[in-house]
Image (cartoon, rainbow, N blue to C red; front, side, top):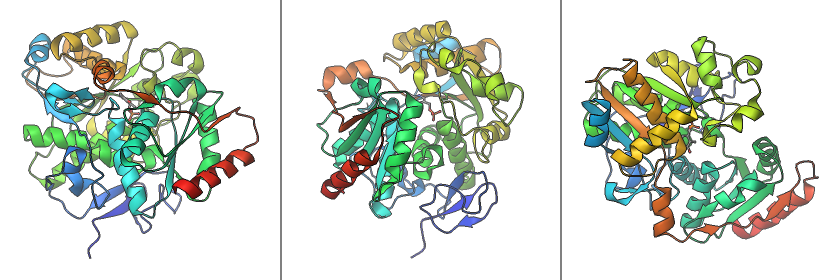
Length: 424
Ligand SMILES: *Cc1c(COP(=O)(O)O)cnc(C)c1O
């Protein structure tokens, strides 16, 4: 049987034989990327993201699944004076056929990641998250009854809800911040039977998010000229770029990459600052001085990653360079105005990050960075939380353990080993 895809190191250009690896075994500081043998995007009858199964690194779909929806809003287009504006919405908006019960595009990452791990031998993913990612994996676990290990700061526990009671989540609450949760997750990922989920390095995660671009191209018949998104790690934007390259390879959707227009939330804007200097390295003292203080001031905390895959080969710097991209620093006031604009025109409550992306679009229009007749894709990466609360009973997940960051972890690792015996 011809394998469906190969993995290639972007930096060294060589094939990586072991498809389960998250990084290049030769040590290049590079992402690895999937290369699908099928250059044409064949659509399947599966729902949600699995309509694009041809370009997902899994054999079978993990159902049920939601997916991105692409539509136009006459009101928003008129308000902005744009003739070819498409919206991709990843959230809960039943009137628009958007059914993501976790409310964000993190669900597109969680689903193929869980499915791929199952197909590659059934290891259990370990995820450190401060918000939407943890919730996406928790929901998928509850829905599909597959085990996951999630580590979050203790104060984020109330945000980790599911719409069905969860059966197989080993949740660790750390009395600390996101960095403490990451450190704890590294210990747990070393427990036999577990693997680190991998973040941006995980090809399933990127190709899952790439379905936003695929759905837009299939719906509108072409690759957009401009793509707007708010970025924290930049993984979603890298995924959009990679998906656009595949669409060019298909030949039916045009031959020009979309220009990436990416937004961060002031005052925490490390990638805006580094890109303004066209610098591949993020220098903490220059690009994110007083980080903790600044992170405390943004309206969208999913945009505050302190260690994004920006410099790495095949990462966000390369994506911006390849697409002659723009970065925007959006203050909270502009974000709040854009939130109201989306509510009034599209008719849904956007995730704060989606509001930040909209504010960048408003700025691009005002500054004539884009033309009124250009083909634009605005990625509203999350929203519809108010409707989710109306339509579903939300279940919070109780922690299996609550840890101090400095506490010895042997007992916790033993507890996880025992848990895996029952759930693995
Ligand atoms: C995580 C997230 C983002 C940022 O995505 P990255 O891939 O980390 O850049 C934007 N919007 C929402 C709603 C998110 O949850």
